Length: 364
Ligand SMILES: Nc1ncnc2c1ncn2[C@@H]1O[C@H](COP(=O)(O)OP(=O)(O)OP(=O)(O)O)[C@@H](O)[C@H]1O
Ligand SMILES: [Mg+2]
Image (cartoon, rainbow, N blue to C red; front, side, top):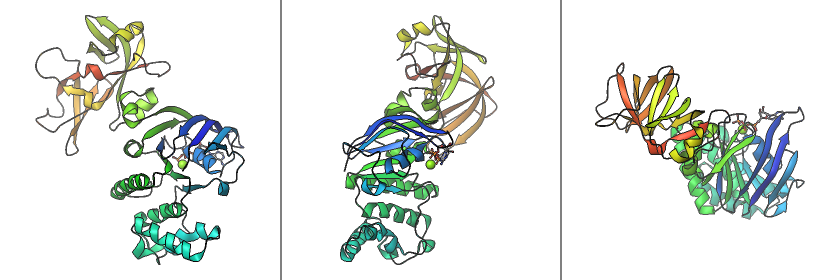
């Protein structure tokens, strides 16, 4: 296995489109790194540059300490699983699995042995003679994965491997991929636009948007300390509530928004936020950090409860504060009826603040 290092990697397509403006990070040996971002942000482009399928416009790419910018794909010892499986329709599962090894001229017996091993790992042994058309979506996906596995490469690149599967299969395959990663200790880059997949699979996550890296961190760090408004809004479901307003202090801290004045009490970042008094900021509140007001002390705000969405172990409260939609999540218990006005409190030690102009995190 190997370390992969991207140093100011850049991709400008011949039509002038800048797909990757600048990407610098390192994937440690044996790490499962997730690359996440919205459609069109340059994820596939970045992966194809690592695989050698797309030329590099600027910067350097090293694998195992060797600069490989000019090294042919077949000599990079990388296997890529594509967004659309790309199985050969006229070949059986066994032939699809063994194709890469046959191309390399491996002996027939060795190929058969390796195909059996991988088919067993992916529970495809009983489907080896089938053609791809006769397989379920999940089985096809496993064959695509298996084709990468048989080659035992230094690095695996997976481009949205689960995007064509239904919700239940995605979940099963997600666990399967985590298990394979643990078993092989392989270096893997996993691309997805699904933030849940990113959070559950990644040891570290690279959040990408518009060809620019927004933040690289562990899933928990990204969730607890998003570096900017994009990351704050992208990770977390339901998404973080974002309220724009001006910071004031009148006894406690307050945020004057177009919908009214919110009481913020004494936020954890109070000392550092002094510099932001009387300036415009964006307040971020995760849905789980909004609660119904009960007992003593002032409420932070009063909002109109529009819709309750029970999802089993919790309920999402869809609220409106002036023109601003808000979402709160809480355990299902006695809840106010839709149509009523509810008083809410904020978890003041878990608030997020962002500069309203630049969108960068402030205060801590
Ligand atoms: N050959 C090309 N020539 C010009 N522009 C391209 C080319 N290939 C991709 N692009 C553009 O580059 C941008 C990044 O594309 P890319 O396929 O890397 O995005 P992505 O993040 O993988 O998106 P998705 O999640 O939809 O797969 C897009 O705006 C796309 O239209
Ligand atoms: Mg893509």
